[in-house]
Every structure is written in structure tokens, then in C-alpha cells.
Image 1 (spheres, rainbow, N blue to C red):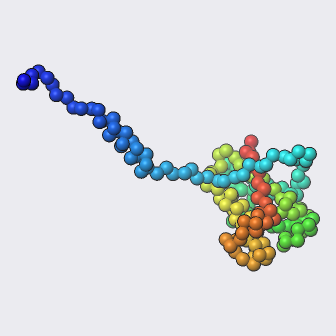
Image 2 (tube, rainbow, N blue to C red):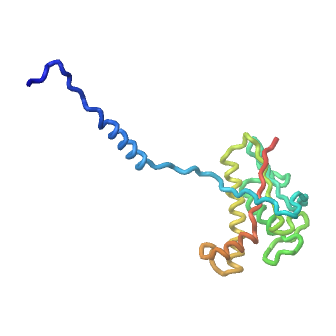
Image 3 (cartoon, helix red, strand yellow):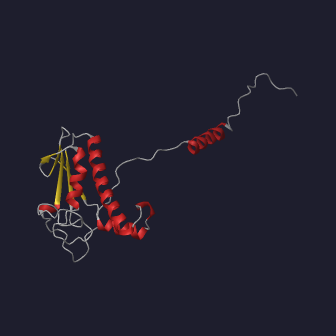
Length: 186
């Protein structure tokens, strides 16, 4: 029997789906996905039962930072440069106005915070302010808290922050809690 000349031989496409599937798997496995980077924040814990969390914070315990659309920076209604911000925040947090903090080295001014446990940093930014300027403010705040914790670490534990145990690190964080609130300028 001879084959008819009219039969058209075709390409077997049955394995094409297998090849496409293998290529898809290959690209999924070898592709790297970059993680989103951003500012890490912690959402406040809910108010415990039986505790009044709506009480007013005294004005002297709030350090207000304002960033307007022209990227001008104001701290407690005074225009400052980004370079001055870290030292101003450290002085505010470490003030020890009510003298309840035995590890603070502040000047005990009556117009600054009572203690690091009561100090709140309030940031107000305009929608049109530059993101780089906002990140600069966040870096200075993180730097101020890091320096205060580092100094306490040396005084209290006599070692570097990197060498602390989890328990010792928690003591530093509780001594200088990172209390920041953010709002948008109208």
C-alpha cells in the first residue's frame, strides 16, 4: 500500500503546550521580584478596656513639625533647617521637664516635654511637599531616637546596640518609645 499523495502531513502540535508550559515555569522560577520599599510604621494598639485613651495631651508634650508645599520646615512654629531638626527633637524628647526620668540628660525646660514616655512628635505635611524632603524628616527623627537609645545603651549596658539581647533592646525601646503622629495640612 502506498500513501496517497493527497494526505498533507502536519506538524504535531501536541507537545507545543508542554513546551509553552515549561517555558512559563522557567521564567517564573528565574525571575526575581523586587520588594516594595517604604517607611515601616507600627499601627497603634487598641485602647485597653477601662482606660481613657481620649485624654488631651498637654501642648508642651507635642513637638509639631510642619512641611509646606514649598518644602519649608517649621518646628514648633519656628522655621528651621533639616540639619537642626535632629538636635531639636533630641532636646525635646530628653528634656525631663517633670524630673520623673532618671536616665534623661535634658535641660528640664518647662516648655518642652515632661519625659520621653509622654513626648509625641506630630508631623503635618502638605500634599505638594516633595517626597525627598519628607523622607529627610523621617530620617532625622529616626536618627534622633537612635542616638538617644545608643547613649542610654552605653550608659546602662556598657555595650553596643548590636550586641544587646532582645530583652535589653526592649528596655531601650520602652525607655524612648517612638511616638509619631502624622496629618495632612489643609
